[in-house]
Length: 197
Image (cartoon, rainbow, N blue to C red; front, top):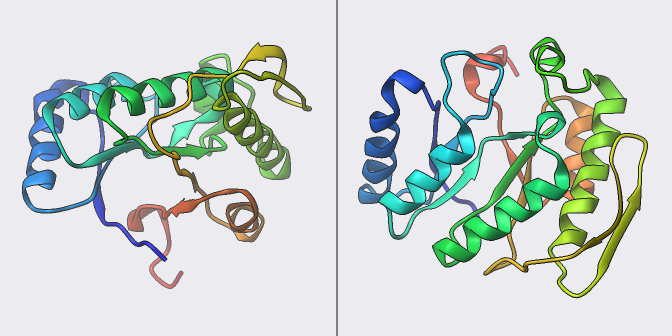
């Protein structure tokens, strides 16, 4: 089992230069990963994917990932395209963290589906299926799901390396999904969990 360590950084709009400084410091200290939190409904946050690109440009070794991409607000086919492009531009330093969208009110306020519980997990699984299929160039991708459907999109580009798909999740059903379809788990920040858990 490959265990990597990194930091989770909020893309606070008032301190975006600090985000880059923290990414460079993490690389200088020998960490493996920089995760940029994705809460697009938070007024104080800048865009996660813009911050990820800036972090990749500011570093040379460390890998980056969205920690975690809010799937209800970021369509799977576009996530696949963004992830592959970042990976190609960085020479294989991009991983993909995804989540079901734990803050339903914020998702709904931005026009996304406010899914919860098992419906949210089913949608996440559908999205992961689309992402993996979209990374296979030369194939047409069609997936008919309850939440996500694509019909005949062209697969590609292929990423520079096999991008890991990591799920940010809590709870037994979500962790079961991690075990079945993911390459890794993005553990929740400790302040989101009771200490006894």
